[in-house]
Image (tube, rainbow, N blue to C red; front, top):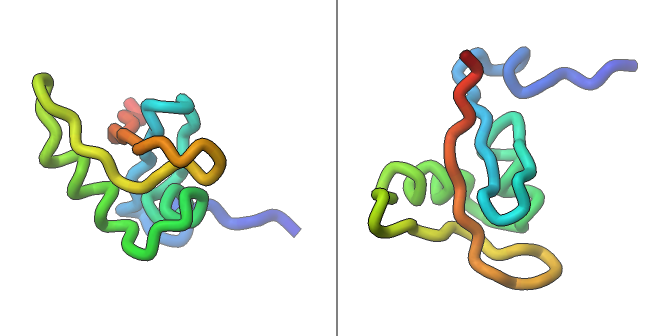
Length: 76
C-alpha cells in the first residue's frame, strides 16, 4: 500500500529543508517528528523571523543535539 504524501492530505502543506543536514521534509509536521519537537509551528516561526543577518533555530538534531535552522522549499 502506497503511503499518502502530506501534499495529498493537505494541499497547503509546505516543504521545509533543514539547513544543517540538507534534508527536505514534505511538511513541518514530518520535520518536527524527526527532531522530536512538540510544536511544528516553531519551525515556521523560526523561518519567518530569520533574516540574512540573523537566523533563528528551531529544534535540535536528534543525535548531535546541535540547533537546527530551516528554510521553505520552493516547488517552482
